[in-house]
Length: 262
Image (cartoon, rainbow, N blue to C red):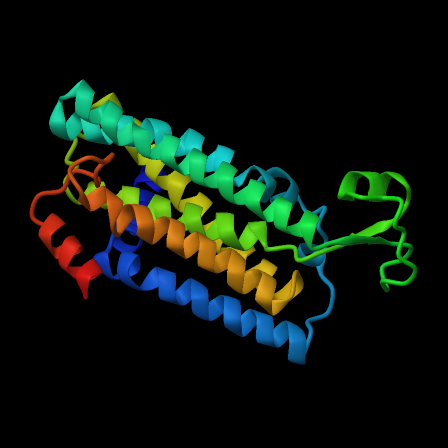
């Protein structure tokens, strides 16, 4: 338990800091551009992380929204109820997860349609010999072909959005004070460590995507969709009265609003 407390304190001092929320979007955008340029100009040698079957990609990234949803659900419920004691407000705040689910679904469906309408089926990865008899990606792969279209990076989008959403929701820890002997303290501490580790994985896998996968334009669009989804919610809509609202904060809320306006 002592090790868990140490990890939680470390995360409180980093991810919860206002500067992290302010500069993380810029850092992600810069890392995406730098990684993409490295991939184009001086590709890194293949490694375990460049294999799409690596454990982090298969069991974490491909289920990124499920992991984020399942850990934020109890975290938002416990911290918001602890601070407000109002079930209605907690349900309102939990609706951020429904909004996030809608964003995830709409964007991934949009990316899939863009790849479909801009793509064609080829006989080989070198894009030789168009196979016009296959009109979609599923038919193409089923027939042994290779589908090539404008494949916006879903990983760049989702990992950006999930990391920023977690950091935003963890800002509530500025206000949370619990008795160390209480079971609520143990539950929140465990969730803080889990969410911190998850954020670390998302950022690391975002960097791997930048240096190993997709081309520059596909990652630019993916990251842009992630940033716009985050800013459109936490930086604009959630500041309005008719919205799920921001995490309950007192002294820091006005500073947060001012930082977005800057």
